[in-house]
View 1 (tube, rainbow, N blue to C red):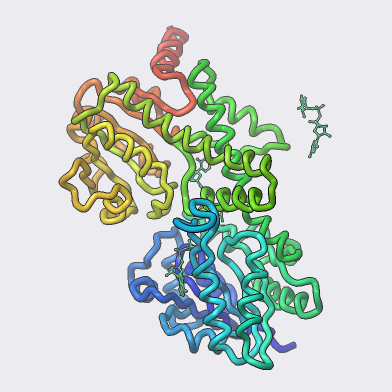
View 2: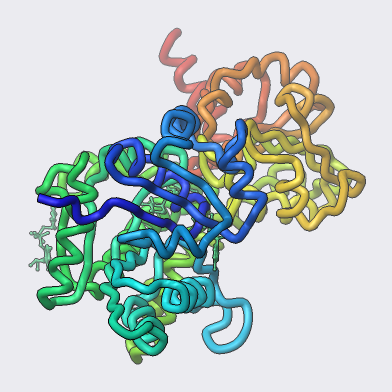
Length: 474
Ligand code: UDX
Ligand code: UDX
Ligand code: ADP
């Protein structure tokens, strides 16, 4: 049979569009994939040696496919005209003004894509919404297209949410837990769904490709992210109880996770969750619920965000309290600025919140992250240069030198391999460690002489635990 799709165009060369299309090109040598973006710098970076995003394993794949069946371009019109299928993966930020301000997703970029498609395309195609969008946005895309379509042209709009997580995108895309395709319940709708599943079937087993109606598909994406964030907020809520009682959140998480109904993943208590998706998607869910007069539902999900704010501020306060209630003019090293390990992305990173809190209390910060660009850190902290209390380091030992405290904000693997004796020797005393990710060996740090505090354990508990261990060894 003839291949239903020969050319794919993706609008948006960001964290979603870039990796998704790279894997698509790798797995479908018979399909030509063109990623377009209006941001020329981004496109140039995708075409260069240094990609605009850091994602383990991605560079090799881009190098392998680029120029063969994978292209990055700012020339949107020809790519749109030629494509049989168009992915929309532009950003959908939270609205900053007007109706739904601070909560509703701003669909202006999605809408402008739909308008452009309708304006330039002169044959029928499949439009696939990949950006996370509010429930019923496919319907808005359909409306915009219908109102502007050229005669004889028709579109099928599908919802195909992306579930990749940053830092593990290549693996998530190569071995997805599932692929959701939502479409219209009509013959044309089913035909479009089949065409997109044909694309995925190049590498994803049929039983993992799930077909459903458009609204279910759109809502599933919001619900999945809300559930994931809720689990972290739940364990973080328990971490506060642990700190007040002497229970240890790691032990509690382990015990909870062994229940097969709950499972062990996403139970890592932390300084708080971040990333571009969780907050935005939950706010979106809250806004939709309110719009539907589902007040209790809205309040329920809002609490997941409130708990995260509480967790971030609790951590900041704890640092100040432990350091004798004042950090004015004290030097503090922040290790890790990305919102999670294996990415250079800082969107909604809890490190930003913690850093701002410490700056407000008058501290001087020394920031090190293996992947985040210097300019990004300064931008996130509203600093024009490094003169005003923020210094960014290329080396963790340089960051630690002469400080009163180390604050771990990201769970980078290499942080647990550093020579903490060397850091301790170069620091002011008493030297503190605040482990916001629970990744370090706390008893080893205490032995060196650090005062260690971590999430979900009573302050000073690590000293005591070590002493009990010592007593038992006698
Ligand atoms: C619960 C815990 O499961 C068990 O581990 C603990 O020791 C005691 O409390 P139980 O209350 O006996 O056990 O039953 P459970 O199967 O958990 O169901 C509790 C309620 O939730 C029931 O009313 C059940 O109908 C309801 N439920 C359960 C749902 O509504 N949906 C579900 O998906 C699961
Ligand atoms: C998330 C979803 O996982 C992904 O399916 C969706 O497509 C996009 O949103 P992402 O935000 O990239 O992906 O990363 P994720 O691994 O979910 O982590 C989000 C935040 O939660 C990070 O700040 C991470 O450090 C934090 N986290 C995660 C915890 O604090 N504890 C955990 O147990 C897991
Ligand atoms: P995500 O994490 O959802 O991928 P990003 O911000 O990383 O979000 O990427 C979205 C990309 O979409 C950006 O590179 C942006 O320039 C691009 N974009 C947004 N609107 C349009 C548009 N109307 N036409 C072309 N590209 C767009």
